[in-house]
Length: 395
Image (cartoon, rainbow, N blue to C red):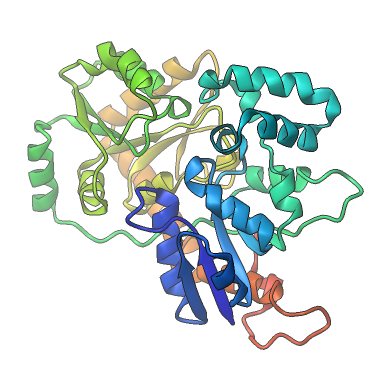
């Protein structure tokens, strides 16, 4: 079987690009994988089935167009295309896409959302309209990574229309490499983290939905010795500027976008990871998976996206009015209690290594690709088990 892997790929600075490339190398052990970046319809045509990796940003515009022109299996890394549509479509096309998804009665709402799109990064109105229908309808199958995304994808096609198969497959993560205490201490020294200080880290793309303001405010309430590391690019200069008074604090360490190697080093130095998401877009955070694999105590938002994660492997923070106080309470506890950090870290690493290994996840992909390549009423030429290998990631 010849599979077209259609996605942004490294050196593009994108977690999806890194994920697609790593998955492609694993799948290539079992089938002929052709990496196609940028998308090329002629090259896709020469393959038996296409595997598209789609995210909620303009980086995936050409992937989206190719997936509509040459239907295949689509991995929805975000179960939402609202922000992609705002950045990729002109006004008229955005409005028509909105109407296609939600009906003629929604035209005025679409016009309003377009005009107010500058607030779309954190405004819940945009997150309530994922704009998935066209891509889901035109795909052979959809792959998602959590229960919320599966629900959103299934709801995208109106009742009575032919449903598109939706598979919930765990987000893979590589097992973390062991590090020595000497190396960890060297990294912490580079960051000017003193002995006795606990390092709290928020890594990756820094946007309003990651609740960076909430984290800065919560950290400001802590009485125990700590440092707060923010490593990654801000989503917009205006957002960074708005937070600048909070960033100008001796306890805050700032790093811009870092290489994969430097990211691993920062994780080794971390004691507590924070990766909140609200409003959420049906995404499963690869960063959360990576922090868990490294045995870190991780705080996440209590939502359906994270509902499959065991209660003894992550600490959940409720979104809403009490978010800052609740986050500060848990951070204070974890900063003061090294045993609690170790407990959650051990359970997190054990869970991820058991349920999210690359080999197991690749097996799910193999089954799905075989199922949606083989012509109807034909015997499959491979024996990995078709859709039966696809399981929910509920624990």
